[in-house]
Amino acid sequence: MRESVNNKVYVYRDNAGVTQEELADAVGVTRQTIIAIEKGNYIPSLLLAFKIARYFKQSVEKIFFYEK
Image (tube, rainbow, N blue to C red; front, side, top):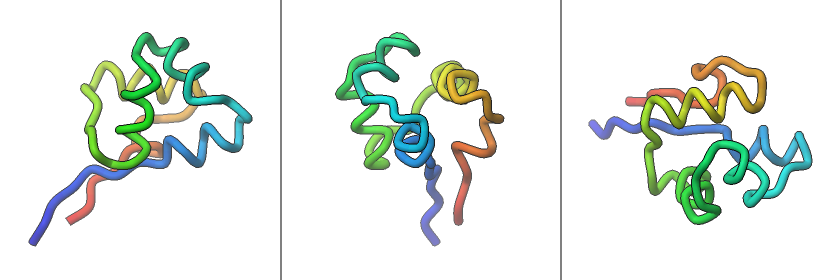
């Protein structure tokens, strides 16, 4: 059984009308990091997950979720 952490970063970013570059600047990472997170190729640190959640005024659990 495969375990993974998935996310809705793209959904929240798209709904907010924010570019990948704008989000990256706001949370202190590169645009490539945001791309990797959105594609599910990179699981952010807990600190970065909290920064992204705070940016969208959401809980971490609404944006990032564990699946088995």
